Length: 154
Image (tube, rainbow, N blue to C red):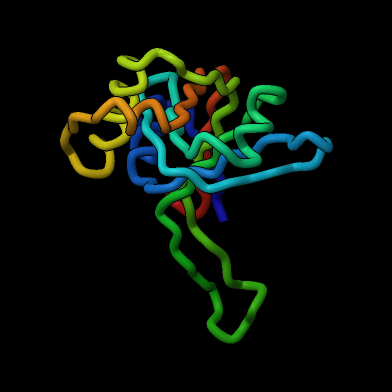
């Protein structure tokens, strides 16, 4: 099965846009891997996450801000021989993005980021009341390295 790296920013963006969930890998406070699914917003070079103001991820990210974000789309099971288990495989397109998660404190920037995220899922902007914005934690990840891969597609 062919596996190819993707360097074209438009192709990488296409994969990210197809995803409704990303998976954020981090290192917890005990040095162990910790991965969580997130809804997200994306603009060129930045991934945005929003979350409740408490929880394990909020303990981890200020101390261990380096993250790896995984996106995966276009999954398709295939086989070469229906009766041979080892001939089965999965086609996919994926992206890995690396960067540092920084907590966003500015009210207006949080509103803008929430609208980037809501645009992705609903296609529209919203207005937010102050308690809603004050009670959501928002992180911005500036992508320092990004790489795409496709497997099984030509």
